[in-house]
Length: 150
Image (cartoon, rainbow, N blue to C red; front, side, top):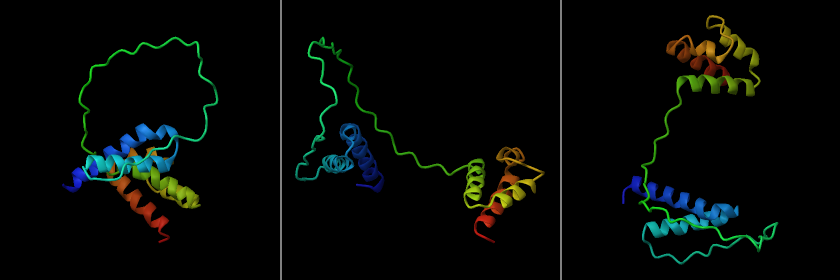
């Protein structure tokens, strides 16, 4: 089985485990269920995994006199399996925003303000972004140099 197919099956197993067991709120139970689902999807012979219910009881008792709810039969369609989406590289605008935040977190406020002002007096990330991709690239290089302590 290819690596992509294996990763897809692992992702499906984890999604289903979260959907089925995630309501319990027990991370270990979710992991166990994901492993069981993955083994099932890969058609391996694994020992059955027992998924335990939480030890706590519900805070309220169900209403005994409640009317039964009608359940309508939904049309069943095969589940659509989507191919995993590759993580897109952050755009320059996103990178500018994150670098400004990183400089502020690193107590480099004065340096951040000076760097922004060096690009035609920009005071915010919008001022950098509006000036175009060349300015954003130059700002990113300058911000990375400040953060690296150069």
